[in-house]
Length: 194
Ligand code: GLN
Image 1 (tube, rainbow, N blue to C red):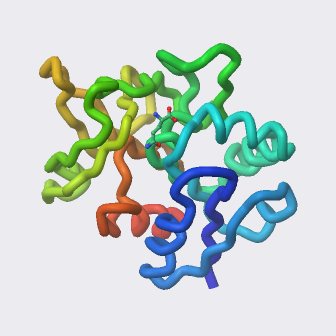
Image 2: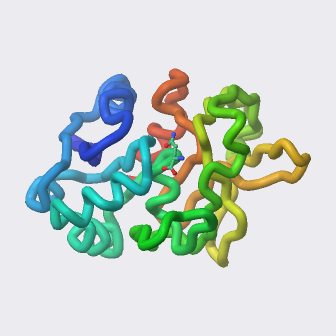
């Protein structure tokens, strides 16, 4: 049976676990390096990227996680998880590190601090269908490198359009939270990458 790990250091772990279970896969919470050995994919939840980054290092998980992703472990990061997958950050805090897994620059809190949370109707570009998305102090993709496929875009308050869901090889990232809006297509895509 397919086992999907959810990085369980901080953030909306439960919601991701429920989304994976609803699709019929087994869930395993990951807090220790050896727990990484048992998973066929890993989810980096939304939460606070600066906290998750510090805990990854405190729990000696950063290096093994980077190594497993580099070796081909499929990964999905939502919101803070998207930030963690970026190679470069705009508005990161001093000393903030990432897992450098998707060649993209991600801007933290990009939609403006005044708007804590917003719902938006997006187009899921893989099939052109509508997708309701929940943004919570969300980042956006400022720029990206070769090989990055844009799966959805959204407009900022200033009218500029930015990628908010991307795929690079078997690595997925969304600026929004499919795990809290009853939206199975993103988790389904992760399962298909296994
Ligand atoms: N702004 C948060 C950060 O920088 C992300 C918010 C979220 O995951 N909902 O980590």
